[in-house]
Length: 113
Length: 111
Image 1 (cartoon, chains in turn orange, red):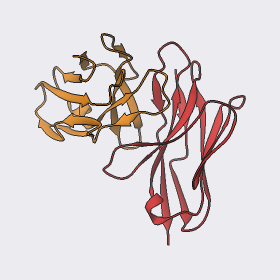
Image 2 (image 1 turned 135 degrees about the horizontal axis):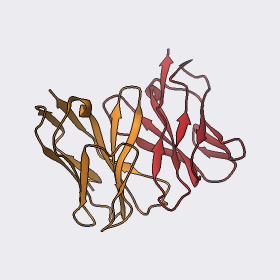
Image 3 (image 1 turned 120 degrees about the vertical axis):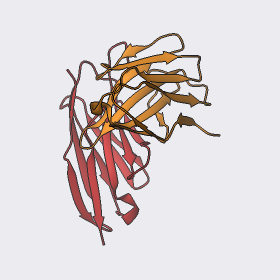
């Protein structure tokens, strides 16, 4: 049982390049989340999807877009990468919007040069 | 806006007890969770409090006081493997149920 799978695990981008971070969960969860983690800043919510077909902004959505492709998959897109987007990105899922426990993927370490 | 405050670092001795506090100011409140994250790893769920009081799970306990907007995580019989970062997280009580995290407390357990 893989849980939450993120690809890629590592990525280096040049400023202005675009890329999509992929996330898939096999737990039949309804809700999915994208967070970024910077040193000393904890986890900050970028976007989330309460259920298939819905997405909403989190705390730091600027510079990002998301797609809830189906119930399993939730992708995060950087249209024009900036050095300020250098971070570790985590995808997470929970059974329902109000479920207490969220399950996290192993993260994508992104460097923008 | 939302804010969750935690101490940035705590140091304790192996076998001891340590308490990590969390105060929050959020637009609505549905519950307080705690997550553990080892260096280079992903956050993993530890505990959850929706109502006031103490919840115990093995060596870990979590407490919540909604009237004080305050909670804590209590770790007993500390082991070296408990060295990690600990995050409190609030499930917002508005219709979004967003999960918002604090900045984390880095716990160092010394021999």
